[in-house]
Length: 187
Image 1 (cartoon, one colour):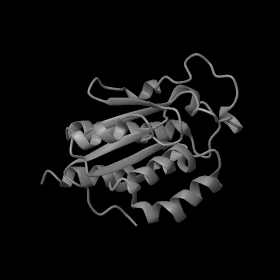
Image 2 (cartoon, one colour):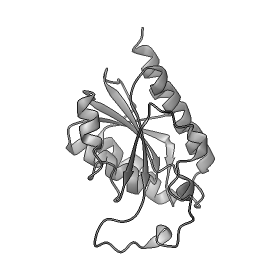
Image 3 (cartoon, rainbow, N blue to C red):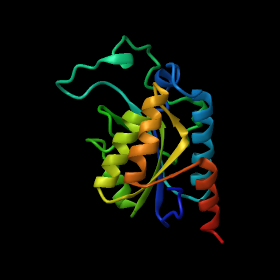
Image 4 (tube, rainbow, N blue to C red):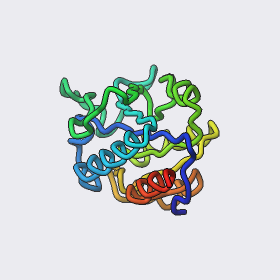
């Protein structure tokens, strides 16, 4: 389903676009994903809407991580990608599990601003992005997923989330469609 509308109080959540993750091999070029996220963030800031920048650090208690994120990490691993151009007005959170809502204060931040809808972008589509979208849906937010501003470790995982799961959680859109909807709100 293509995005049809954005609520008056919509926030952008950008998941795990941090130096350690954008350097990993992904299905789509991470430079393009970051550039699309930058475009989204600029539009949200222009419309004075909340921008939430999420990074991941550590692990949930009792968990043993496996896969590409289980190796030793460089010192700048958790730093947000420089290209994001984080602003002082952006809300930053650090998560220690897949979803951005778990023990981060994100829900309280959004509720305090009367946010009813979230637009989500980032890496990895089937992990941090999907988990955050599921959590947002379960918490009653309207969810829009900017699918050209995300990627995954494999095309199969990305495509499965985008084609099969995201339409059940909300609306999918391109960055251009979201930016257009934001501009239409001012007319």
